Every structure is written in structure tokens, then in C-alpha cells.
Length: 211
Ligand code: SAH
Image 1 (spheres, rainbow, N blue to C red):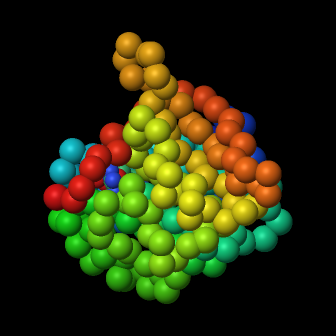
Image 2: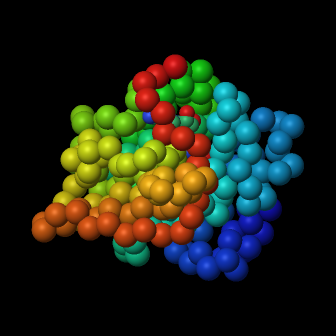
């Protein structure tokens, strides 16, 4: 079922072989409630409780493909904002040396820590807190990826990005009546930050504080 899912994604233009291999490896059905397992390999987001969702595999693949930007090997340290059920963190663990993932909902953070324990992903560090502040202790990051969208990218994220690093985040586009989000890519170069906007996406909101 995973191979089939990956083949379909490849048909939609996703092409980074390392990302495809990681998606073929991680058992997405282990990250959703048993009642939803039958849909785990469809390209759809699914509820994970507390009003949050596991991202669509196609979007996870697309964002990680942008994050890797054709890099030949593994990324160094990566920061993820919005752990949710931990699926994307598990995919990232195969493609980065270290993954720091922050979640602001205590109940989700606790549940995910229990779920990931069985997978023994030694390089995934789950953190509880408001991810808008990033995680300075792990900085600088080769990559930063957000699974929740705000009106702008917090400065802490670009501050914590390494020179040569890349950030991928959904951001609400100003002026849109329906608060349309798009994928924003920021590259940090010796000359400063370079921004590019990609396609429209639909993510849960990036919220303040913890709960
Ligand atoms: N990465 C997940 C998707 C999680 S959905 C996957 O693999 O499918 C996005 C998550 O971001 C939600 O769990 C939500 O609670 C969390 N979130 C929203 N704002 C946040 C913030 N400021 N800091 C940390 N997490 C946040």
C-alpha cells in the first residue's frame, strides 16, 4: 500500500528519490486511530484529535522535497514546528541527522511521545512549547519546516536558520478574503534572506502559547 501511495505521488510530479523512499518506509497507519487505518495510504489529511490533522502525504513529500532542495546526502539538524502525531518527524528522521520537533498541545505531545517510543527513532527529539520561539538550543538548523500556518514567519526561525539553510512554511497571504495560505521558502545566504512563494496550501493555524 505504501509503494502504491508513493507511485501515485510520483505521478503528481514529486520526484526526490530519497523522500519517496522515506515515505515508502514509514508506516503511516501507525500514526492514526484504528478506525481511520483503512484511509492511511490515501493522499488525504486525517483527524488526530484536538481539532488537529495528520498532513497529506503529498504535502509532506512536497515540503520535504523543497527543504532538501536536491541535497545529495542527509540534512544536518532540522527543526519542525507542529509535531502533531509525529508522522512528518518520523519521515524527517530518515533524511536528517537530528530532528527537533515542537508541539504546543500537551495532550498531543504526550500521546506522540508514547507512539514514537516503539519506533525507537533515536534522532527525534520531541519538545513541548510554543514553536513560534523556535528552539535556540538546537540552532543553527540546516532546515526548518512548519506544519501550521501564521500571518508571517517568526523572526526566531530565520535567526535560528544556518547560513546555507532553508525554511519551508505555510503562510497566510495578506489581502486574501479567505486567508489563503501559500508555501513560502526562505533561503539564508551570506547576503541575507531570499524568499520564494510556491503553491497554495491549507494548514491548521499557527497559534500562540501552549495548551
Ligand atoms: N506534522 C504533523 C502535522 C501536524 S498538524 C504530521 O506529521 O502530520 C500541525 C500541528 O501544529 C498541530 O498539532 C498544532 O497543535 C501544532 N501547532 C500549532 N501552532 C503551534 C505552535 N505555535 N507551536 C507548536 N506547535 C503548534
